[in-house]
Amino acid sequence: MIGTAFSVLIRLELAGPGYLMLSLFNYIMLGYKFLSFMKKHFPFLTEYLKLYEFFYISVVFFYGTIPQFRGKIDTTNIKFSKEYKQSMRVPNNLDNIIVGLLLGDLHISRDFKNSRLQFRQGDSNKAYLLHLHDLFINFTTASVFKDVSFHKKEKKFYTSWTFKTLSMPCFNYYHDLFYYNKVKVIPANIKDLLTPIGLAYWAMDDGGYDGVGDFKFFINNYTKSEVELLISALYINFSLVGKLNEVKPGQYAIRIGRANYFKLRDLILPYFHESMLYKLPDLK
Image 1 (cartoon, rainbow, N blue to C red):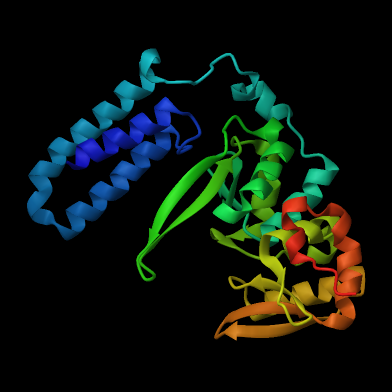
Image 2 (cartoon, rainbow, N blue to C red):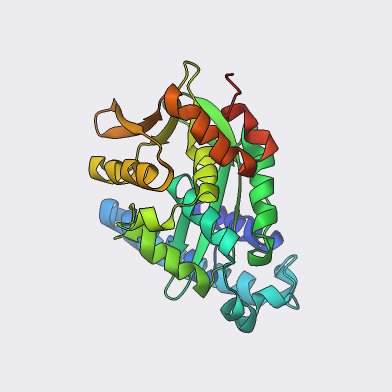
């Protein structure tokens, strides 16, 4: 049963490249992590797991090396070439956007050499994700696809839309800047990186009007000192006064009061995607 599950996982990826966006190495590591967990917690299954280990590796290499099982992979696509990946550079407008998105929901994963961007938005923001896909079309071969997950506590199914870029050297800079020991952090020089367009994409990702005159940036995963660093950058760069709000113990938001809301709106409105304009109501 376990072997069948992994076989199905592999078939899904090979039938539609980009669906799971896992490399052969990732499959092997996924399998070995699972095997290590089972051997540690269920030692009485050791003999069975030896057989499964042989089966798993066989399946991975069989489906990963036989051409007819590669599904829709277009081996002639120049984007898969080493030369293309090494030649790619992030243009200035996308550099500003990536900084803003990394303050929000954007995630970066890194293998031994290169990094890839991972985008995800809820079902209601599909149009916005398609817009992001268009922006990064030169860096990806994957289509936007639907992901349905079950929330155990709420006992509900949630739909999201996601895509990933190819793994490229040009994204290593952002990974090194925004990650420390695999945890996302705020760079100490964020004030030198945050521009109006970056601010706009941060607002579209993790901001919103609260209905009572304030705009809030929800930044639950950062420390208090990091949030204070962002507040300082907002004031130095844009003369925006932000207040620190503790939403829950250890979780924070930045509140832009009504007195600064119109300044913020005028600053970022030109860069907002039409599907996200509901976040910037005209209060005049």
